[in-house]
Amino acid sequence: MKDCQITNARIPKLPGIWEIEIQNGKISAVADCLRQTRGQRLLAADLPTLDVGGDWLSLGGVDLQINGALGLAFPDVQIGDFDKLTQICDFLWEQGVDGFLPTIVTTSIENIHRSLAVFAQFMAHQPSNTARLLGVHLEGPFLNPQKRGAHPSAYLLSLDLKFVTNIVSKYAEIIKVITLAPELDPTGEVIAYLRSLGIIVSLGHSQANFGQAQQAFTSGASMVTHAFNAMPGLHHREPGLLGAALTQSHVQCGFIADGQHVHPAILKILMRAGRYGEGLFLVSDALSPLGLPDGTYPWDEREIEVIDGTARLPDGTLSGTTRSLLVGVQNLVKWDICDVDNAIDLATTAPRRAIGLSDNYLGQSANLLRWNCDLDRRLNWERVCLD
Image (tube, rainbow, N blue to C red):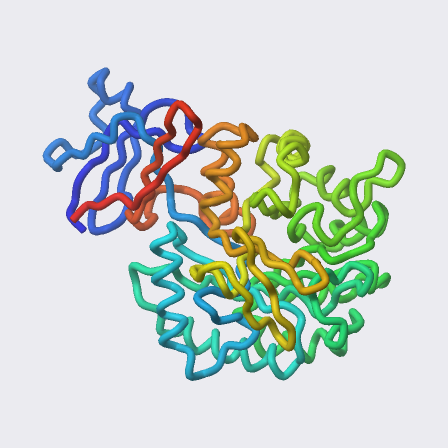
């Protein structure tokens, strides 16, 4: 990747027009174009220039909840699947994703341990210029059976410190997020234990009331899994888990913008309640048929049917999507949920903030995304080519 400077760029959440300096494949400087034109030379003067004409530039996407792709469900991963995992990383890179948390949904303890062991080995030898595994998201098995959704009831476990320790202790270094139902542990000792290991606790698949959720957030939970889905809805007398989350400045709520999991009108309400995106981030919740055509596919011991990118069990239970992360960004703009810069932020820098990664452009990889929006609010993107 050659050294250069990119000029006349908009950067999500930063007002004005910017120049970005690239050296040795990294962002070495970011400067306000107005200050440059006033004679305050902030960037090197001798680098070749790429003028993007007012398009937005952003970091790549980060998907904190993705259950599989190209036919491989992450709870089923085996030691012989390294080539398939490499293909998935390359595919996600082509979909504009820089990093992701492979998500292991509720399954047997043996499957969880095997999958974690495979991901630990794979993460130790990841190549560059592809989507990188940033850790693992355990979505279950400590979920409320009444809100299990498509998770198999046979493998749900009580939120007991003994079970939790058995599952996570050996693999705490690679488990980045765990989704659990806090009302299953009224003592709060599990959340405290997980936080002591550096694991982010996300609340979801839960019947928690407002008080129970508030207590969990006070104990250290800092995230909500797919807002509105697999939890009670907002109610004016009982705000519930989501109501509690939206009153906490440190809590980040993930949400799905595929038009099926949450109605666009509710997303507009969520955007306003979530401090216009400051407490929110996008996820795909994509399943293993991501990258494959619609059809019927195996899913644990069951099958899912994918129609128009939406996956359901035979009984009609919504189980996920096969649309990639940046489709959600495009939908938010198309539905007039938020401005372009907010929509881009929700899939790029917001997920980084949610898991404690830097959202500062300085020092980041120069594998940027370039975005433009037409008069019909169709948002398009491509990877910036600096070769």
